[in-house]
Image (cartoon, rainbow, N blue to C red; front, side, top):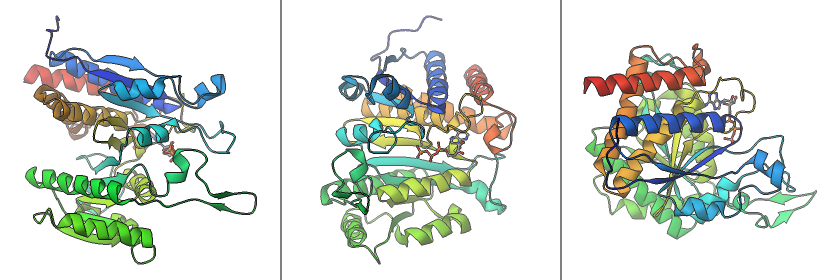
Length: 375
Ligand code: ATP
């Protein structure tokens, strides 16, 4: 089928990374490409960038020369996952160039949807668990990851003591909370639960009291949004007791890192947990999970988190360039996954099913073709 020239061909940085990151990035790319084809949108122009633990082993670099600049110049970045526990830098940590990318491009907001699909695997026996549909909004450039993003920031690091820093800045936190309120407003418009909860530990840490103070200041600008507070430990408890009651949860970096794994676990596993890392100029899209060395090379990874991240990228590009057809492409992928679970055609190994990476990817493609034929 001839694809007509459209207004714009998007330039996408593709960083596959390591372990299952490679498989799920390829799955996401395949699904995106098929969607563009059926919607007759110009193909994306991919700029593949080498980065990660394997690349570090080969070259001593964690990302190829100029890789960061190349990524920044693209319209969006699609990433698999980076790092392997067996490959360590001289500081004893894993290879993590993506933390630098976040900081360099100021990708301050990590949007991590946690959503149940009908008939998909339910970890909680309460039937209301089928209604889980919330967003963990994780601050992405500072918090307790501040010293991890770039070497040389740890003030005390010797064999007797190590100190990491919790950094909360006003400028970044204001942007994050505004983003959270806008997200809650968008959910209101979509008829979804839009309760916005500030998750912190404001009773103990000055940094967290500051985080909450700024939340209250920004709340004044968005009087229409219903808000609440929760301490992070209580939030972990409530995510098990009644996750269906939450809409958007905004929090500091490490809290978001931990609670998003809990969120993934609630809805079938990390293979169901996509992530969009958004800044004022750039967006990076990836699954919330890591490289999962325990299952790599076995065709066991659930690619849906990567595919859903790809769908979030299409939505982002649609807004960024005011290009509606890409939002339609995103909607089509979401619809394919919904239908796949509804009709019991998506059964990831991760949650006890019989379908590996290849089988899930092929089924999503078949669903896309069917939806297209019926439209
Ligand atoms: P990181 O800190 O980089 O996020 P991690 O140590 O939290 O990594 P993950 O790689 O996210 O670890 O994996 C955690 C667990 O979830 C592992 O047991 C892994 O097998 C499983 N897992 C992660 N992603 C998937 C996936 N897409 N499909 C199936 N299982 C997965």
